[in-house]
Image 1 (cartoon, rainbow, N blue to C red):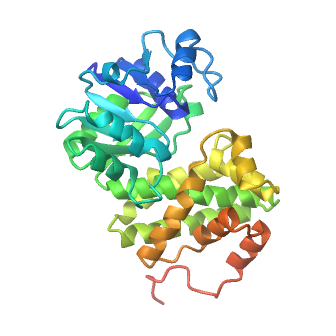
Image 2: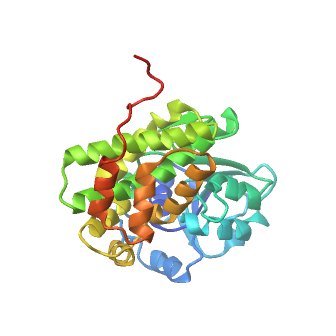
Length: 336
C-alpha cells in the first residue's frame, strides 16, 4: 500500500532511506533545515555527499518548508543527528497531530539528560506515537539495494508492524521487537565500542584484539541494558551484536574510522574533521559512562574510551590497562 512519508534530515542515512522508501512505492518528502542542501539536491540528484553511487529519484519532494513537509504524513522518519534531535522535535511539535506515528532512525543518547532519542522526541512531541528502527545498516549499502536487515521497536505491535510493512523490501528485511530502550542502547553504545576497535586497528593490533573488544563490549552493553530493564535477547539480535559487528569492522563506519585515526596519533578533533561526518560515538561516550555510574554497572571499555577522548590518555596505555585489570570469571551467572 502506498503511504505519504516525510523524512526529516537529508544527511547520508535520511537520504538513503528516502531512496529506499521511494523505490518501495511510497510518496516521500525529504526535509532539511539547511537551505544549501535543499538547493543542491534539487539541482543535481546524482551528487549526494557520501553516497556517490546513489541517485535521489525525481519524484521525491525535497524542501526546507517544514509546514509543507508535514502536511498529513502517514509516517514521519526522524533521521537527524543525535545532537539535533531535541531542537528538531521542538520545531516539528506544533505540526504534529495526536497519534502521529514517528520512527526515529538516529542512534545516540542525549548527554545532558541521559535520555534515549525516542524519549527526547516523546518529551517534545507528547502527542505522537514514537518508535525506533535500528540495526546493521550502513547508508552506503542501503542506497545501493545491498541486502540489509533492521529491527523496529514500538510500544504497540500494531505500530511496529505498520512501520515494518512500510520499509520492507526484497533487500531490506525488517523484524519487530517490543524492547524499545534495548534497541536504542545497543544502537548507541556500540559506537563507543567501535571507536575502541578503530583505535586498536590504528595501533597496529590484530583480529584477536578486535574480537576481544567486540565480545567484551557487547557484554558491557548487555549489563547496562539489563540494569535498565531491557531484554537480554535484544542484545543478541540485530541492534546489539549485529550492529556492533558491522560498526567495528566496516570501511563505511565513521566511528571505527575516527578511532583508527586516533590510534594513529590524531587528536579527537582532527580525527572527526578528517572523517567529515558526525561521529556519534564521541557524543555518546560521556552519556554511556554516566549511565554506567547511575546504574552501578562496570563498563571498563567505555571508561577507557572516555579517558582517551577527553582526558588525553595514551591509547596504548588504555589497552594495557584493560588487559591488566584484576582477573575475573567471564560470566558470573554461570556456576561450576
